[in-house]
Length: 393
Ligand SMILES: *Cc1c(COP(=O)(O)O)cnc(C)c1O
Image (cartoon, rainbow, N blue to C red; front, side, top):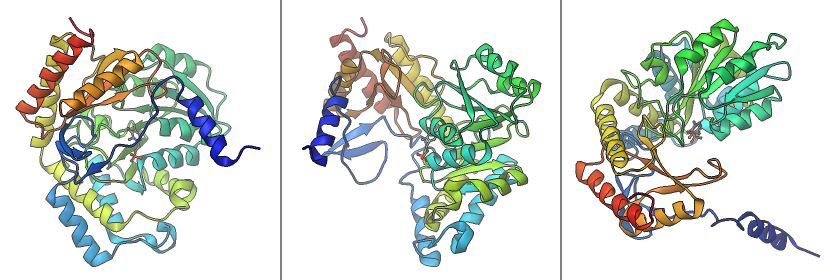
């Protein structure tokens, strides 16, 4: 008879037959443009800490101040006795920045998508989702039990095809990432909103990689395109450009009231530690009042992307600080990333099932705080290894 250890061991062997297994890398100290990895300081080109705020003294101080006045734990669900001052201040600030009636915090982006989608939609509804949407959206749709369709990535004809005979459903939801996390391209939100109006559908965006990066005040793609009022459900996180943790949903009063009553990942979980909300609030204030970091970030992204392309690398349709470098073969992508790390630069290889088979890639993410020399070093290393491994000529 097999015991549990044998059963799991068999499964992990099966799972990893076709490639190296995923494993954790140990980081010491804070997140910055460099990090300490296995005792060695390396240049970090794989975090989502786009603005370099994760270790910023102002965030640390905001959290420390809140620890002094609010303590650490929030002790219960927000609906019981856990609705603390820092939560409310962050929600007010986000509603103001997003120009919506209200905002509701969730513990993280993953939980927000589960709770929002499954709390608002059910068996009588149709959810149409971009094929490259984040896993948390896919899981939220599954949990909702709604009828679901996935349209070809950013393909409006494919989306419209599913909308055409959708009148039998109670609600129609179109849901999309605003910046796609593995390709670094941007949703065609103007077109999506137009289709939604024509077919009476609700639009939901996940601004996880756009919040703090796009928009005049860092509000995201909805702000950048001036689509306030046309996107019913604006979700995003404080875990990426904001350098903190937690997530938001911004929208109308009735939307937020419904979520407070129905989103199970809001109702049945303990409120965020208030110090986490306080740090996120400080980040939001910095994002909306200081645009220089955003400018530096977008300049670095353009510079790095242009130079990678000039070397002959395929960066797909990246238009953001997420710059995929397509290697295709999974083992080769892993080998490339291993060799880069030997040269003191940390870039993660991304392979199936996270991306489609044959599109394994290095996912390079750039930060506002990377220097010209940092970018130059990465380019030098990519040129050398790319030639050695015959990915470029
Ligand atoms: C990272 C991410 C999430 C999850 O957010 P967390 O706060 O890390 O749980 C959700 N959606 C998208 C598009 C993301 O990139």
